[in-house]
Length: 115
Image 1 (cartoon, helix red, strand yellow):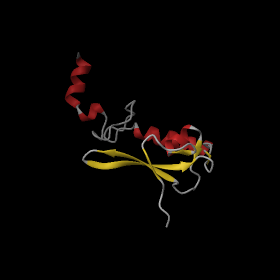
Image 2 (tube, rainbow, N blue to C red; image 1 turned 60 degrees about the vertical axis):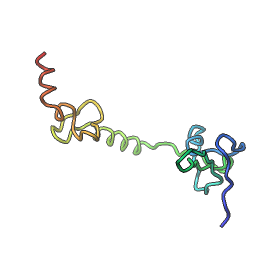
Image 3 (spheres, helix red, strand yellow; image 1 turned 30 degrees about the vertical axis):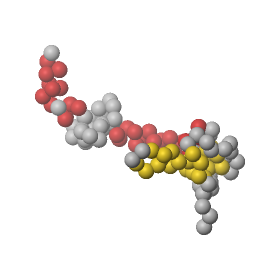
């Protein structure tokens, strides 16, 4: 087992990129193993670590198919449906409430309708 090269934050040589940096270039790791890592030291806590991949071994991002677009649209639409009143809330129902704002705060929403 070989050890990964470790670079300090902002000091990685050219030719390496994180997943997000690859994605911004329209690339993906494409099955390659992590090539190196960045470490950012912090006081009183463990270092932050970012994994780096070789840009020359990265592959282009696969394009979305019509079926994937349809599945994504269906999933996003389902997130807008309130499980309590079964109406489209017009926004993504917050996981912290579990219902739309009208169901979570019925007294408040009723006073808004009157005023």
